[in-house]
Length: 110
Image (tube, rainbow, N blue to C red; front, side, top):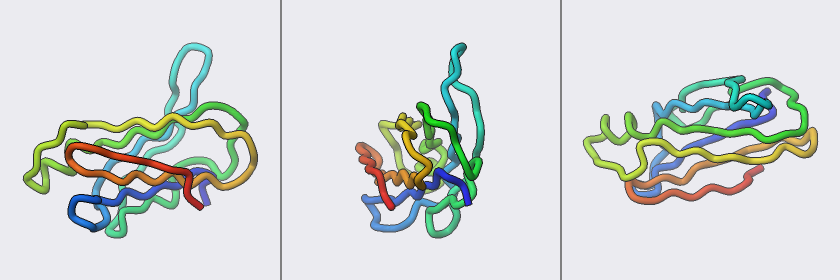
């Protein structure tokens, strides 16, 4: 299993957000570098997103939200959402996104 997982919930509709593309990156001295990617399933989840073990450092998840909203016939103020977080232990990191067309929130899940 990936050390970093995510899921996306459409809080405006109260359902999982299926088909959201997600990119996992790490920061290097010369900028961000991709290390994994995937698309949310029917339950809004991605279980296999990147390596099973990551070194300490900064990471970023970028969610391609524009395509999701376009497919559902809705406009959005946020065509993409990026969440930067720090990995400091070998623990599992679950980083969910609660999404609506004009707002979003995140937290460290379990």
